[in-house]
Length: 408
Image (tube, rainbow, N blue to C red; front, side):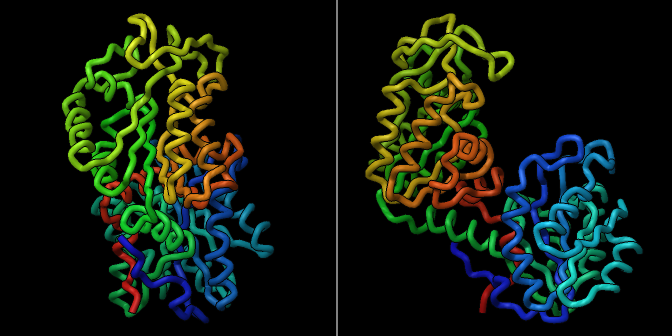
């Protein structure tokens, strides 16, 4: 899926009301933002629209909002930080209805270059249900133009992500993507559809079930597929190896056999661990000190569980990365939150940091791992969307991308 969508560079917003769907789903602790990555990622698009004379109306969700609207998931702290970062007041509409009279009045009072932030979109209830149609129209009523810059939510057909575009189009407005969306689509799209080869894909994480379609799709696209993390043990068991008490997805053993056969029939390299870090139990708490042994992948004791790839595997995976021209990585190699069990993930991150290849990190835990381990600035691109990047790597069309107008 290449980018053939209108971007903020293709639209004229001077004097117009521009609704921008951002991803301000930031972590909060006692009302304070603990990681501003997503706010920073939105700034280039917001600054562009301000500079072009738009009346910039921002919206986003925050958290799951399972028990109804609450101050703990209000976007108020985001408005404060945005005001500081933009060097101008961001008017916050605290109304839990999101698009009610308070929002209408705030937008009516806007001048060119002003910025308004609406309340958490999920305070309106389930955006993807029938309620979403009404909400989509109310959001569109506030604006003349819509810009989606929330890649992390682009795989959801929600009112503020995709639904709103129908009503913007009906009134003759334009629907574009922001700079963050553009960058995500170009990096992930080119990596999957038009990679510079050799193309190496690395998949980790706990369960095979979470990555079924990704494994199959990437096997068709890449030259080498590397498997690590908890899901590697299901592949090892599928090959008849004893994996002790390691995490296993018994229902996916046949699937793993099929994927091993598929790799062989396509002439692709499928790399699986040759050794593992094992312990008698999962660390509790997760970062607790733990004693590990390193054993061959086919010799895991019955009373032990694999919790990370071993040093021989780490070296093999690092070697595979060295000759690559494009690398996509989604999912850690082990329990990276534990200092002892982060060794495999660190080895892969270090290999990516040292290669000349285009390196793309697919959001979620792998993005967190790379940033926590201090390798973030060495990667070509770190995706802001875990679920969205996974679906992109599966080859799925993302509603938030599809809904944007095609470039002329």
